[in-house]
Length: 163
Image (cartoon, rainbow, N blue to C red; front, side, top):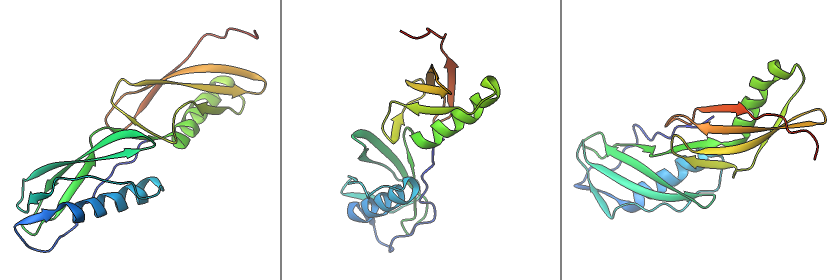
């Protein structure tokens, strides 16, 4: 349900530092490709030492939600690996996976709709609600992000009947 971002193996010309512009462009392109979105604006430190082990943090926003991207230089030529600091949950994938998990419980097709942005930036423990529709019946789900990779747990809340 969550996608991982990796720029492993990206190389940048040999020099003493890796420029912010180079990092920002590569991270924006990778986010756009991974999540099928328009390239977001990314902000990185002005320069990062181009030596293995140098660490840096860049920031961006996805659907109005702040996202830190942690990075590390992995080679003497400025190769970098980056990873979002929080899980990024692709809502459509989460809805589909929840529907597939619920189908055996209800023995009917289930449609799940979650009240979150198309991409949800979340730390483990963050909860949100979804609605499962089974025919004419709607059931509320309490969903929680359970790991840095965006794994989810859910609970079907008790049926309250029509109001």
